[in-house]
Image (tube, rainbow, N blue to C red; front, side, top):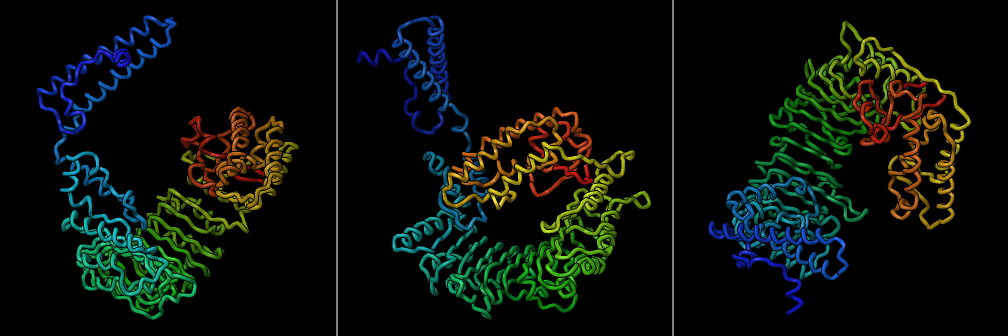
Length: 633
């Protein structure tokens, strides 16, 4: 008793102890009493703090400990009573329902195959009795079902799944459901008790995400002609083993009658035809190695986005011109020649975004014909095009003359003549005047020679710099020094120790090799010990790029921790040297790597770019290496 008295602060008795363990809001009279005791407790806490400050040199450690304990007790008392008067206790149920509804509509989790109960927004129902009552009265909080995973079925698991789903069906009342079924590697036969339960409620299915094998599709045959509310379908058909044949020739018409279906994404290894209500689709993504009846979409009044894989494109039944008057985005990949691909028979007068990968000969002429067929002017704003072979003919220029609204261009490296056409100004107006982003892909095997680099630099200067008095071409020639040669030697030595020195992944020895670690540490130590007086030596060697890759690569945790200090220390030292070097004029350097984006992409930085004015320029960008050949600055 004496011990408790010593540690007890002079605090008032709680006026409403029954509210301390509930979320019931206080009445007006109770709230007044609570504010009074809060003020008294605050005064007691301040008195104790002042007592400690007035006696700082007190040698009695036990007295200080007791006083600090009393301060903590007073603070806890204030916190508990302030919680009683919190506005959240007085929040109307309607507002809480709106908040819970907003949580239940979180789009980040809707596309997940494996959505567990812990990922669902059910936490508010477990806060207190009043919140639970509100949550249970809100059906939309319970209509996103957890993934029905039947890959490893046991009697206990099946029983639990049935009980859980039955309760969710009851709580969700008559709201539409989001259903996920996951069984990519098992053969369930023609039925499964949990899936059978889901099928009973197929009239309420709104969003369905399914991953099954060809043999297991029979489990959901019962939903045929019972999908009046289905709006979104994501169907993945996986082979259980390499020996599965995907049941070639089998026609799957389960989803043929779905009058509200607007978005469909089918993919996997099914070789039979999957029948969908194509005329109703707004968004269609077909990535199956099966026949796709795109002819049924002809003159569709609703289709806006279409994605086709290389497999489905090989099975087209190409014939008459397929007109898609409202198509805004087309994304497809094909092994066909340009003359026999989808582009040969399609018309898309409203197209704004084209993403095309062609693994055969140049497709620019065929694409130009498709745009002419669709009508002029073309509203295309984004063009992504990858071809296997570059063209030496001015096909790109002809195409771009038909797309004056183009904003973003991303293509395989065109010919020098076509790049120069983009750089020139004709009749006071450049080609594609609205162009904001221009990306050229260079193959790793061939790279880009100094002539190509110079022409690309001329294009960047002419399109990116607003000052008309600029020079058309700027060139820096830096002569290698002994120091830059030594840094380049150490860079090659580092690369030899890590053969797969790719952009985001380093491949160290799989087995524990202490000698390998010692060798790499020795190289990094040698790099750090090199005396550098001219920052150009760093840029010429390109070693700063390798160190950045080394720092950010996905090494094993223990290996990364062992090496991490070296590149960070070296880069910090070099950063200061480059910033203070009179030989490196930032205004004369325009090519850099954006560290927030992609280390594979060299970006042109114009002279008025915001990065030049920020102190974090060297942590955001890496100046691209300059060698002894004429190169763009």
